[in-house]
Length: 255
View (cartoon, rainbow, N blue to C red):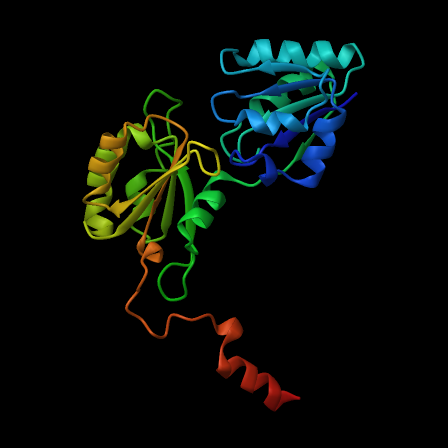
């Protein structure tokens, strides 16, 4: 049998893929991170499926459940919040499964940052304003960040920043970003995107920390920072060349 790593999306049960729903509907065993996934996502599971909440399990214990299910000939789904390509411990788990000779595959999901951007109604790449998005995190009670991946290095580019696993350090992070983006740069914090407890905070580099602390946010939040989040960028020419009159006219001339 194969262990399926499946992106559960940001939380809402209807924001998972058709493939994810199909895999959940046939799985004998489903492992899920209870801290981040709304319980409604599990409504796609068979009623008799064994459900294992991994929030209090370490990687070795999680692997033991996966290997045990595989040996017993059971279909297994390992749900991850958002998309497995970001902060899902996919590498660590699949390395252990490879060592145990257990086959696995990956089904992508809607990432939390995409859901957050949709909720605030903003494109993260605006022509002439920001054309790059940096997905990163900061170190608190977590694995150390590589020295070359400093927040200042990314901020110096002026790209749109998406900060994961960082909401408890919002004030310190905004102080670090202020010299690059300015206190007035827009910031949005989305907690539990698409879930019943969803909370959206809108502010700036200079004000967002107060809002986060007042709301008491401690986890399951994404921080979006950058000028692309502004309602008015002050540039009437900030439009995509792909859909511009100039490009269409040029194509017509070449016919």
